[in-house]
Image (cartoon, rainbow, N blue to C red; front, top):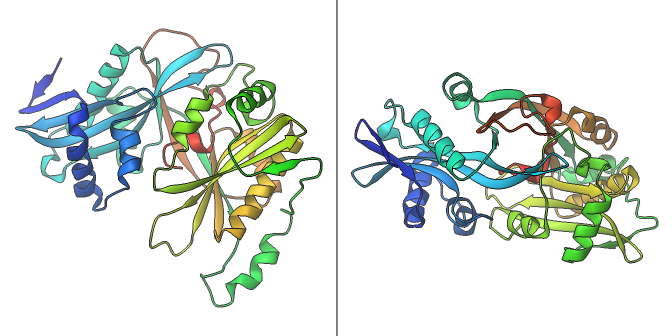
Length: 347
């Protein structure tokens, strides 16, 4: 049902809104993203249309609030969830309470679709609004780490520092056959199953993680114009022991070229260490100046520090529930979450 106040209607997003939402993004942020990237966020998600509220007045889009539909797992059950992102209000409509009404409407639409948990990574300007007006909580932090790779293109003769930055990250591929392509579905499913209880794919209960399937990988890391995603698969004979995915930023005009470590799956710590080291070397060879990683679980930090990653910053993780269900991971506690890299929409 549409909700009306101050002549602005708040309604569910429709496929026909796509051009207007791209135009709104351009007005709000003064730039335009690749159309393929916006398509996977504004119209064609893994589960069809996003759970989103559109604010509209006399045919003009005043604002937009998206919940990206995805599944979480607590190690025992699959939990329908939504990730908050792309919150936008046209400057002409500011001061009329558009943001909280959009957020409240999208939460209602999500509950109507059976969504149980919401999470997000808000910017500082709207963080307090989530907590004070919208019943969200801040259970912990998203921790950012960066690994320097090269000064090439940043300072004169910057490339001579590359061997220094490479110290401690020598490829350790002993016992592995390295294949730089996506494994087939059966190998992915088998590796994910064997990795349960180990590394970052632990699914023994007690923490909430994004539920991974071959279809999720194909959607999340599709060619969408903002990042160039690369797979590194570590095979032992016919068994996929682990894999990582890293992304090279395609954003123009960057003084420092960024790469993101977005996925690390492995059946033991040795596999995970080897995969990360190979990703570091590949990103450096590709011309990245640094490799960035984000995570919520504090216990992951020591591994990254040993591999030369430096703590960069902490930003709040926010969450709320939409029903009375109890889960194996508590969404209101920091140790109830284990999110990494591509679990967030900005990597």
